[in-house]
Image 1 (cartoon, rainbow, N blue to C red):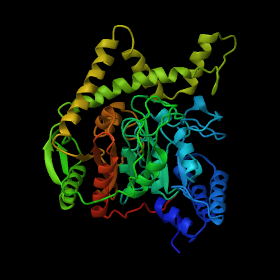
Image 2: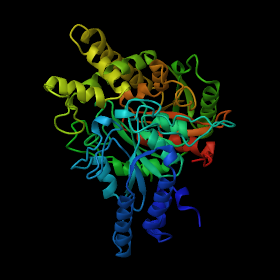
Image 3: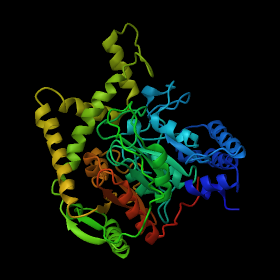
Image 4: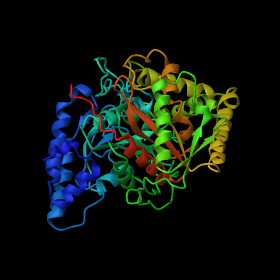
Length: 493
């Protein structure tokens, strides 16, 4: 029999429903992989009992002839940004270490209701701030991939680096991620998996530790486009507890998947051919264009003229929102409290935040507080919001010429841990292709497109119109079928 941990979401769900194997057997197999992969540091905490408990519930329901949910029998990894009742939720920060919520996030509850089980809480960049998973208080996540002929530890991408590493290494068939400026798509590209950020508002933000509230969006990460579509169906839906939640029905994305793109137009933004982009990335992009033509699509040249302003605008807006959101961590109500001898309230706040927040989080809080301060608000924050409007307008005008946009996901393949840690600007440039879609709130997906000369995965990004995840998934499927990507990291951990 095929190793159960090689199966994806659909294969596991259908196999459990058909009685080919039990949900418990699946959970036990993935629990064993999680326990054996501590060297990757993908999980902050493992919850094998939770996975088994959910599996037994599914097996009991199947034996009784009861209907099974969309994710029945599928054990998943949960990014440690989602509140999970009775299980520590830290956002990978010392300031929340030991915090155990009394409530469940809407997204995770939807997944449990659909029959999924939890293998554990996945590591991430602290408060989702990072592109390499090197800012976690609980240590770096290490990519399961290695360069050809090299043993350097590589970045799994960020902030959802634990999710990407775990899925690529077969520690789980799928995982939740969150994407603020590329934190699903960039790690998916680095590790050779698929991941989709849906339209802003598709998935509830309630119970998700906030970074930048006007940008944060949850989404699935899995090894195939179809698995992402199935999981997104379970995650999405209106939530009255989230004021930004879309009150729209959830389409049957998986059942409607179609790789025939006849009659569709694919836009190629000329501004994305940036100086300094890795030649392998540009070659992969050209190959992607050829694949979509082969699928029947018409390729058109488009312009997104304000692209060059997207990154600076994002790194004003996101830190500004972060400085506001993170003000709640004060050592009074939950999490860490540092109380020096004889300290007053202000001194306790200062000591708690100094000890609890990591360097990157502090950097972004300082930037955000600065751009929101009197005298600088109009010069920075207001200007950045105007740029954001112009970027959204660029996309709106592009939709008159095309149905989806094809672009690289990242400017390079995975880099070695430590390579960019001392240069924040070099690190921020990792998001150059992913940030524009985030600022505009658009659905965007990364799918694996092949390997570079060092045998590392490369990803292609598809961006779609608001609410049109189906076209994004269809174009992703067309690329997936033609790329035939079956590469996987060799086990060294």
